[in-house]
Length: 491
Image (cartoon, rainbow, N blue to C red; front, side):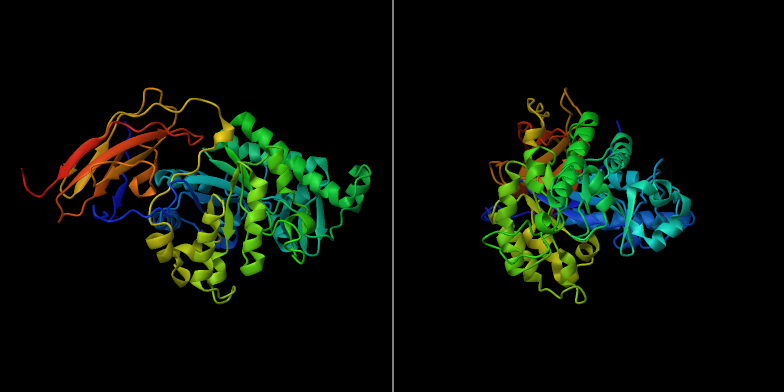
């Protein structure tokens, strides 16, 4: 049996400490890991074996920090501007990894990110820049590999940027071909669409509107073009792997309303996104609006997004980059107060743009998340609408073996094991409450063992239990509890 041991170091809470009820057991805690221009990763080219190892270690270091702050989801930019971070039969490999389009760095970055996320108990979702395919400079650099050169009938130029035309039916077929590649070849947990919108009210689609508009207003026709794409993507993904989630990151303000009559640059009114229709048709499992605003441009829209989601996941995209002095110079409290607000108003979590600002601790954001907002691990919310099956069988009880200051926990996988992940619970009291986030020692584990460091100056009894979760995040009952007494002295 292959064994990968995760080493977790943590400070145990004293038995007399009162548990705080403000920490959710289920919550999505995500970052967007942006690869275009190497904004988050990679920071340098891989041109030989040594630089390849350095490039890979950059990612591992970022993910280690995110794990340390109890993040559980990474949205990795997989399609940039008509180029991708995997070995595609359709589009060129991104130059950001080697300095040259089409040149791989000696490994498959997408497979690598997925594997490293899964090792750390995180889901990995591939996010696609949907319609933009590059500036004139990018298109010229890509040369014959560019979609503009290979499929000019699908593309339009607006200002200095090239776009796939959403109004041409074959555009959806082209995007679906990329989705099929990723879903069929990789153990991905989700597909997410960014820039699945028109660049604004002005867009040179007169020809496609005249050909395919069928008497609808241009506004409704444009929304329906995106609606059809979202439904087609969802059907395609679920036919192949029904547990893979489909999501999008629309503009952060939903639409004008009596409460927000002066809202500008809204998803529905200005860029023709209709997330309510996506939810109602079942085309989306999660929507992550990019809510990179403050005050009246943020708080009134939280409730409007929650209303659209019904039972599906709605996650606030928060602008960690706004903390930077050149990007808004926000105060740390601007972000932490937003986290508290969305928790208290029905959203299912937060996603931060971008990962680099979090791990580099811009204005103390990483410290605040690790020590306060994300103090305890959180399970991902169950995907209840995606399956109607019995919950997994519970694992057998945990075995404990001591090795110096470490305890090694191990357990047998359930007899019906179907690619399960595991959550380990613990308590230093005489009872174990698995409904509390504070009881989670680790979650998202893909192997049936865990090693962690213990406070060597303390004698203490521990209760341990473990549960199994399937790909739909349906959790089993917990195992029988295991009691272990840790002491420096034999008794």
